[in-house]
Structures are given as structure tokens and as C-alpha cells.
Image (cartoon, rainbow, N blue to C red; front, side):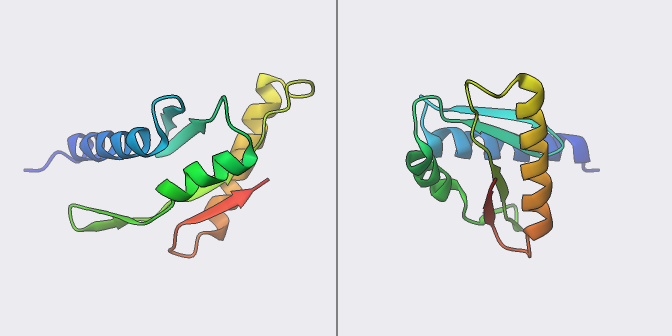
Length: 110
């Protein structure tokens, strides 16, 4: 009998490795919860970040399942943002990206 949780865990590990390798070790890949990953580009501007995201924003096939990605992008403002405002921005971007996903990978910039 298949253990769905172990299958999910294995798939998340494969996706994490794909993101980590694609984005490079100087960027941060963080699994948050409920199939949500955060990517942090500490030494990149918006154009460089877009280039990194274009590397991972392609459908992937794992175990005969095609995965598409909804990516919401926000920019942290060192002078104005707090952890709370950043979390709100990320949540809003995730919701908008998910709503705009029509079965294809997409990126939404907020």
C-alpha cells in the first residue's frame, strides 16, 4: 500500500533540490508549508531575480505527473517593510498567482 505522506515528502524533496540547483547556492530556497516555497535573492536586483525565476518556471514531470508553478513575486523595501508587511505581501502574491494559474506555469509581480 502506498503511503501518500511519504510520496508527498519525496516529491517535495525532489522539487526542493530542483529549485536549489536551478537558483544557485547563494540564493535561498525555503519550503514554507502547503506546497509553498519561498525564494530569496539577497544579492540580486529585480532583473536578476526574474532571470532566476525563469529557470524554474517551467512545467516539470515527476512520476507521470506534470507540475506547474504559480509564482508570486514581491520586493522587500528595507525602509518601509516589516516582517508582518512582508508576510502579507507574500500571501497576497501567492493568492494572486494561484488565481491566475490556468494550468500553466505563471509569474505574477506585485
